[in-house]
Every structure is written in structure tokens, then in C-alpha cells.
Image 1 (cartoon, rainbow, N blue to C red):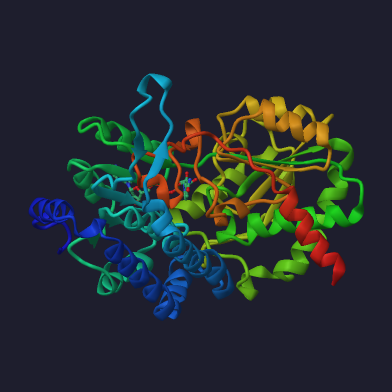
Image 2: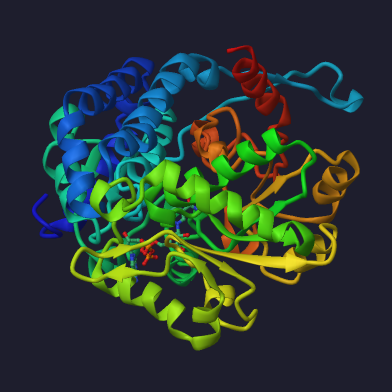
Length: 457
Ligand code: NAD
């Protein structure tokens, strides 16, 4: 398919291919998942190079966040595929005493995937893994803002896959809009709430189900934890997840921190020491922090810092380098709550800390804003943990860690309200399984295992 020339007839052929039944076959699904795996393995260097070109990602970060996670997800799908495809006996009421029923998983059909640029391989291929595992045919439109990655997906990935069932079309909003005019059986979108609304209104025409993976401001609450060792782990996790994953250009990155006033200066001092330890004295030169995707986003971030009250709240960092699209990891304490940095999604390496009288006040603060994609709470206070669980609402709630939920295949990933709808475990494309509930997940168990292992070393 060249650009969008002959789009309608190509798409019709793919729709018919679905009806041929070929993609429902377990062997077809396995072969395509293996094709994806071969692409990831054989083109690892090219993937890393494209991520460097598009986003200045360090090769270790590229492996950890894209190649590594995708490899794990594909293997997870290959392992679970037969089980996901199998029918499940369903219980019936007494009135149907002599009857039996089964829940039969069924692919939806022809799927459109529109993805974002910040994790251009992960956000394109994770939904593709699900769509393939469920036996669908599909079109992927990656983001035009990561052109090297989009080009690799469009020009090299197809050599590993059945091109009658999977196509990659490059382009920006105009191509996206043209695709949205077609009839799909599911649209899986990752991007902004603004475009999410466009997707949803286009889907109305054909009553197409949608999954919208959107963004927003994800808060992290930091309780004044008792042992200094815990504090160190907390700071480590906050910094790695904020500055070490695409320089904060991640939907589940911590957007801002809520902390008690009395603990704020301790937290800031620890952060200053750890930032230098993690990213070096000069991260611009050591290339340990990714670049901002383009000039427009660079200027947007610079603008967030331009207000004088915001400038005065900077306690670390604050420098920018337009030529290299670099924004230094920056910490701010109590910028004005009505400044853009506190009302808009930051999507970059700026980290405001908002101080509160009591950690419990964070609940009302969070609830005064749209429901976030994720809430992180670093606390061992059982009573507070229970309150966070029952009194807040978000796509995910993670205790004592951040961002790790994205890597957990066994959990449904997604947002709620302004942060999105729908989930993406691979089985999401089965129309007979309902897994739409918001989940709240406690990572304390995992944390303890990690801490236990560390302590034993
Ligand atoms: P965006 O909404 O501008 O673009 C996303 C995709 O939509 C791109 O492929 C783009 O070409 C396409 N698009 C743009 N306009 C379109 C239109 N009119 N019709 C059809 N398609 C159109 O978002 P972005 O800048 O790529 O991403 C940033 C946002 O995405 C942030 O809000 C971030 O939080 C969110 N995000 C969410 C997740 C998640 O998993 N929840 C992951 C990454 C990013």
C-alpha cells in the first residue's frame, strides 16, 4: 500500500481476508507472533538506532522499555494463546436446568491501531500483539512525530508478517482522519484526549468499539517514610521513572509529587544527590536523559517554566538547550497551582513538588482533578493505603513503585474518565470477555521481594 492510494480497495481486501477465516487459525496466530518476535530480535540494532534518532534514547533505555518489554509480551501471548482461545463453560440459572452454555472467544474482525511517538515500537506493537493473538486483521498507523521508528515499522516489519492481514500506513492527522472514515470492528488509539474525542466521534458512525489510551497528570504521594533506607528506594524509583523513561514523555510518568511540608526539604536534598548519581553531573553530555521529541514540544516545556513565579520555584535544574532539544531534569517546589505546569499534562522532565500539611490531604487534592491514568503512593501506612484505595479513582494505583504496571502483562492496563477507556491485555480484543473494571493493584508484595533480595545481597 503506497501511502493511502487505493486505500478503500486495499482495506476491503483485508476485510475479506478476515472472513476467509485464515487469521482465526491458531497456527496463523502463532506464526505472526513469531514473526513479530523475529523482527524485534533481528532488528534490535535498527530499533535502537531509530529510537536514538527520534528521541535520543540511550540504548539501555531502548532495550528496557521497548525491545525487552515487547519480547516479554510476545512470549507471554505465545504461551497464553491456546488458553485464551479456549471456550469456557458458563453457569446457568435453575430455569435452564437441562441446558448448557459456553463462552466462546471470538476475534472482532478488522482493527485500526493509531499510536503515539513516545514509545513508538511498544505503543504500536503491544496492541498489535493483542490483535494478532485474538485472530484479527489490522492496520497500524504509527505517529509521524517519530519518523525513523515509523519508517522501520512501515518498511521492515511487513517482511516478517502476513501482509494480507497486517498493514502499516505512515502519515499524520490527515491520514488518520481518512482511516477513521472507514468501517472498523475496533479502534485502538493511543494519544491525547483531544484526538481521543475525534476518534470517539468517528467511531459513532459505525458503532465501533474503541480503546482510548490517553494521558493526564499522574500524581505520586510520598509519605514521610520512617526508615532512611526506604526513602532512598522511594527517591530512586521516582527519579528513574520520571527522568529515565523517555525524559518524562510517558503517559504514566509521575507528573507531580504531593508531600508533607515537614518532609519536603529532606526529599529535595535526597533527590539532588541521587539525580547526579544516576544521570551524571551533566546528563546533556552523558546522553543518559532522552531528548524532547521536537521543537514544538521543546518550546511547550520551555514555556511551562517561563512564568516568573514558576521560575522562582525551581530548586534544581531548569536549563534548556534548543539546539539539542534537551531539557535538564528539573525540580520545582510549590509552583502556583494555577500555572500551566500544574494544570496541563507536563510530558517532560519537569517535576513539581506540592507541599501539604498532612499526607491525607493528598486525597482531596487528587480528587479535585480529572481521574488520572495512574496514582503512585509511596507509603507503608496501612490505614492511608486503604483510604487511597477506596477514596481515589484512577486507571491504576501502585504502591511503592512507579511505571512498573506497564510491564505487567497479567494486569489490565488503561485509564478511566479523561485518562482513557478500555484496557490492553491481549484478550481485550475478545468481545465476549469483560475486563473493563478499574483495577487497583498493590505492588507492596513485589516491593518486599525486591527489598528482600537486595537486603540479602
Ligand atoms: P496525539 O493525540 O497528537 O497523536 C496520537 C496519534 O493520533 C498520532 O498517530 C497522530 O498522527 C494521530 N492523530 C492526530 N490527529 C489525528 C486526527 N485528527 N485523526 C486521526 N488521527 C490523528 O498525541 P501524541 O502527541 O502522539 O501523544 C501524547 C499524548 O498521548 C499524551 O497525552 C500522552 O499522555 C498520551 N499517551 C498515552 C499513552 C497510554 O498508554 N495511555 C501512551 C502514550 C501517550
